[in-house]
Image (cartoon, rainbow, N blue to C red):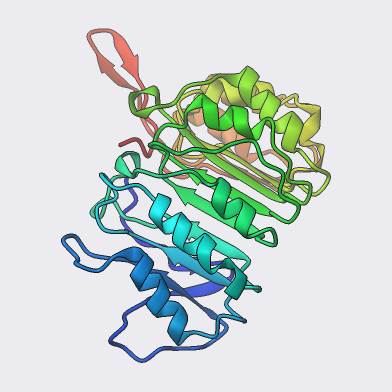
Length: 308
């Protein structure tokens, strides 16, 4: 699986592709996606400035940044600086998604990201931040009082990012979603590290925990099935990874999953017998997209859904 479609809804709004040549829709139910083409002579900071000239900056609630030119070469620092520079004019901005690109625009592990400290500092009232791409992503430990949804999508998340999160503070966090990926594309870390992340960020308000696209999905499931910090979680999302019977059996006997309403295990390597047992659990279990082990000369291989 690859990311083949641009985002269609974000922050409970319909996504519309921004085109300077088309009449502007000021509807509060719309969020605009700003994106450039390859060999585009425009620059993303200029596109942002032009967009903001047309919109009511005092009421803008959400914005999506797509391809910013050559994202496999030029990182997002210019984009971040431009957004931070406009922050005083955007008092109502509550949601940002930076890196909304399909595989045709740029594979997820080729997206060169940047440092997010300037953006987090500039928008203290931000409630949702979604980042796609882990290549050259820099995240320093931070304290943000209003973030409710925090997402990093990557084909391989460096342990430095997880360690920074383990030293950060988001007291109102409701949704934590991390795509761990595979070491072929930059993943490093282990269950012990993500235990520290959860210990730091498992606020009383946390309802959704997603440790997705993980090559260590079985190990994560064994840990989480008996993790007391999951007491407030209603959605546990271990989809897109390599979860098999080891993780499935741990979840079947989990002692701290009693408050779940949804367990998402889509894209999995679980046997049919254990799938039937999981379906009998007293909450919804999603088991879409079953996979089969890939064998080569006696070696067994499993693949995450989104790598390159």
